[in-house]
Image 1 (cartoon, one colour):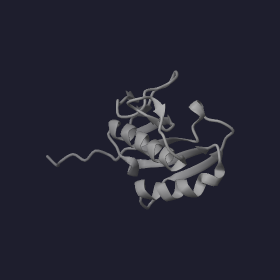
Image 2: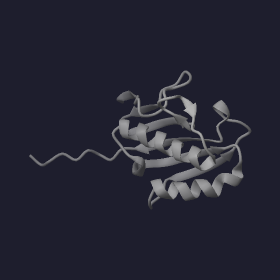
Image 3: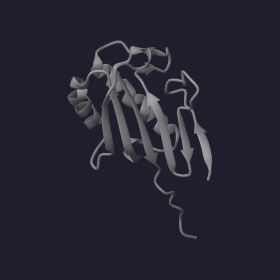
Image 4: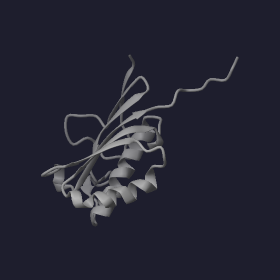
Length: 134
């Protein structure tokens, strides 16, 4: 087993005792992302749509730092403080993901860190590297 800690300045730094992601062989476990702007470490200004977009951008940055992209996410967990925002998640998710979509759960929660309205975490399986024939 090869374990690697993933970090990028293009996503918010960890605000606790965790890593942005951990790569084990070809599987990458992406920690929960809230709508923090990486440069300021503050919640993005705007409505829930702006928050959802920021979360997807943060996940994308961590996925890329791990050597992958959002198309390799196999499981996505979405945590919302207001489940009536679920249709907005679906609409925005369609801008970032294409069929076949990852497995997904949507969970209503009472509160999230820094009073965010949304948080997402994911599991990504990187494509096998192809090596040219010798």
